[in-house]
Amino acid sequence: MRITIGIFCFVFSFVFCLSLQAQLSGACKLELGTNLSGLVDYGTELPFVDLMHNAREWYTKDIGNPLDPFDSGQADNLTYRSDGYPTHVPQEIDSSVFDQRVVTIWAITDGWPAGEYTVLWDGTGELSFWGGYENLEQTSTNRITFDFLNPLDNVLEMTIASSDINDPIHNIRVLMPGTETTYESNPFYPLWLEKLSIFPSVRFMDWGMTNSWGQTDTYTWDDPSLFAWEDRAQMNHYTWATNKGIPYEMMISLMNEMDLDGWICVPHRASDGYIQSMAELFKENLETERHLTVEYSNEIWNWIFGQTQWLNKYGCESQNISWPEGMVPYIQNCLDIWSNVFENELNRITRVAGVQVSWQDVSNRMINNLTAGSFDAITPTYYFGLTEEGDAALDVLGTNATVADVAFYARQGMELTKEWLELQKSELADPLGVPMVFYEGGQHLTPHPFGEEPTYAQALLDIQRDSSMFNMYGEWFDFLQTLQEGEKPLQLMNFSFVAGRSARYGSWGILETMDQDTSSIPAPKYSAILAAINACEINLSTPLPIDDLEEYKVYPNPSNDLLTVTGDLKNSKIVVSNNQGQIVFHKKVHSNHSIINVSNLKPGTYVLQIINDKKQSIKKMIFVF
Image (cartoon, rainbow, N blue to C red; front, side):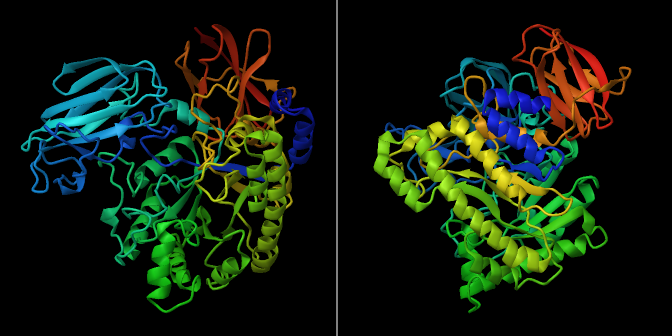
């Protein structure tokens, strides 16, 4: 039995784990990637050490107003630089009797590491802070430090109290502990990279704020204009938590640095020039070893998103074309431009067309109106969740509902989704001779209607930490394998990576926070995915030892926090054992760069073992203090 499977069997269900190993061992029918969460000030997924990147967009405060409202609502009336910073502060505006200061906030800091933070900025002016920090000190003209010793259940608000019009404050950086000298060369949060390293691919839909992209809100779609390339998210903008998301340059940097394949979504209001330049940027800057999946927007049939409303108005109603057929030309145009840019290197990209898994007629009318050969795969979801009948039955149980009750009705929902997926395969994928790849999926345990607090809320929260969730994921993966044909594994993009629990809006993250201690707060979804990934990996039995090779670097060593391992690691297994030979850490490595969290290990000497597919073993001593 593989070591990883044994560990998960001990923690969860022995019977399920035997089934999972039997199903996947040697077959490798599934390839699991993950969607990444978008940047928001209240998020617990923190990819960047500079937290200014996920600051809330500016709001304003009155100067001298005795009522002191949280937000004076004047942000749209101020003047700004091209990088989004105010041209000066305070600002006097006609619509208010009070001068205005500019403010941002991080409303939830649960994912922030404890320690000393550093704030740097350029320009002349004054910053002030409010929140749960301690020991704030201005150490120089443009540098402030403070201690955030208890980020959990806390908040941080930052105000530009003054900013010189001739030398305005800009380029503010809010840096995690210990990153002041490294944030430029190492912009990604090491703990986030370490958690992410189990996956071979990522989807950037939420990183790019694809849903309602470029719109002030979901329900404002009365502008037919398209965006030019220069309107995209820019590297120097004060925050990336906007309606245009994280710059494409950072997506490319992550993929190149971590040897990840990627999945990008082209904004629905991108002009032809935008789409062309976007394709050229990825073609020219993405390493040729990295594979890219390309999709036009996201769920353009989902009426809760602005892209659906916009496409319906300007692609269907304005053109007097039926829905959903009026959306097809936008998809086709995007696919054609990417095809032309990658004309001689189409093997580097997979062009996908989205389908609505539960509405076969809509899927058929969209896909069958696309040009044959212009797309390489169709892409549905692979969620399982509660039917309306299951939700109603749980509502009757109310506070008496148990985890077992939720699991029972979730399994009923699975059976319905199985029928939908088999229909998508038989009616579209197979007749067209294209595979299915899955843009997102996993558990979808939410109330009906979405957004209302259910009477059975506690059971809906509890199942997210229960072993029954682990077992359901295994059962679901078993079914999904039946859809795979040929030698290429079925691509599944998990949704989503790190996010907290919510009975009203869904508990989407496979981890609740990046530093989640799974020994006290179980993460069954993460564990099930890790078990499925590891189930068809390298067998660790009787590896052949060879000499310690210098090209493998491990640093810093000793460490009490994070270890970085570099070298020819791709498709290897890293195993850490204590001095009694017991395995305390293991993972599959998909790149030549890996980060290991040793903060939970007891001080002592350990053996780090690198095992490749030839059963070679490279051993290095590591020291934890």
